[in-house]
Structures are given as structure tokens and as C-alpha cells.
Amino acid sequence: MPSGPSLRQLHAHHAIHQGGLTGAITKTQEMEDLLRAKEFEVARQAADHLVEYWETRVISHADSEEDGFYREMLQQDPTLEEAVVKLTRDHDLLRIIVADIKEMLVEESLTYEVMQQFHALLVVNAIHSRDEERMLLEEPSK
Ligand SMILES: [Fe+2]
Ligand SMILES: [Fe+2]
Image (cartoon, rainbow, N blue to C red):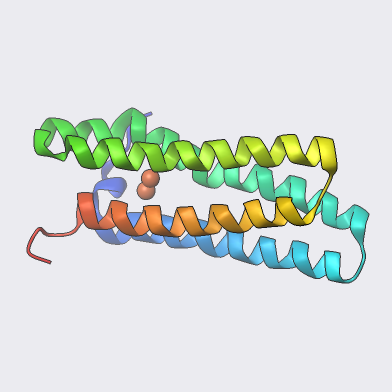
């Protein structure tokens, strides 16, 4: 998928990151509220929706970056190779955690360990977005 101009612009790209993270935080909190209210079945459905949200909003953003944006940045400046390798590993961590969550949900349902993994996604994603903006989009003088 071509990345289009928006991924190359700091403010537009930052807005995509911010929107994705804000939605994930809200949905994680809603799932936790349902658990506290002992609405276990609805909480489990919310967990499935949250997995889908991570896949469609965040992992798909990562996929399209690797298909287009990262390659374009590398063609423009080959010294960015190390940054691209690191950022791609971050994407892989998100993919691994999401796959683990899906497996845990099937095998154990919505346990405390699954909740911890959802929080791990929030942390890894926030650090990744910050580093991606800094390494690929901000002016070197900053
Ligand atoms: Fe990314
Ligand atoms: Fe990004």
C-alpha cells in the first residue's frame, strides 16, 4: 500500500498515532470497568473487539509503514537503516503480543495475565510512536 503524503508529515502522522492510542486506552478502560462490574461475558466481548481494534487500527498502520513509508524513507536516506530495523522490531513486538492475547483468550478467557498483555501493548505502542516520530520525522536539530 503506498503511504501517501500524510505519513511523511509529522503532524498528520502524529495525529494517526494519537488517535490510535487514545481509542485503545478508552477501550481498555471500558473492558476493565466491565470486569469490575462482574459483567464477564460482555467484558470478554469487549476484549475481542479490542483485539480487532489493535489489528485494524495499529497493526495495519504498521503493515502499511513497512510496505511503503519505511522504504521511501530508506531510499531517501540510507543512514536510516538502523532506525528502520529497530522500528520494525517494535512492530513485531506488537504483532507477537496481539497473537499471544488471541491465544490466551481462547485457552484461558479474560484473565489477569491477558489484562497485563493489553497494558503491555499500550506501553510498547506509545514508546514506538514517540521514537518513530523522533527518528524519522523530526528535524535532526531537535
Ligand atoms: Fe510504526
Ligand atoms: Fe506510525
